[in-house]
Length: 117
Image: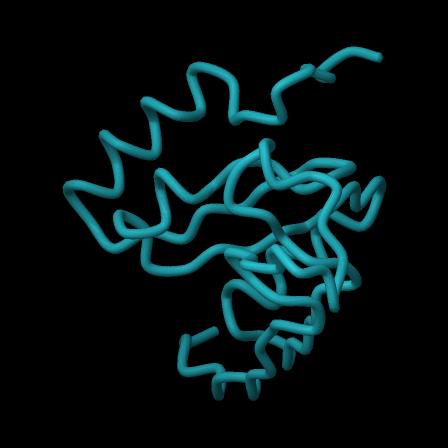
């Protein structure tokens, strides 16, 4: 399908955009993908990582939680690998050394709306 790649990397211009933007300002990287991608090379440069998977028509919901309008709770439904060479990787494997383990995630509270109407 369009957008698929065999090495599960972030394609250009995404990778260079992360380097350019995140070196200048605090940044949140939002990945819209149907599967985990290799993100380890970027983790030390970003302030937050959100995986929106494939939100379809619900992309506004992703924005709503990013801007603090609603609480957010997210837990990984699968292990997130460091490199493609680690695949397949499952909890309990002898070589289990994930970037983010199964169930890793975050829960937030909404931020009070302080904008003036």
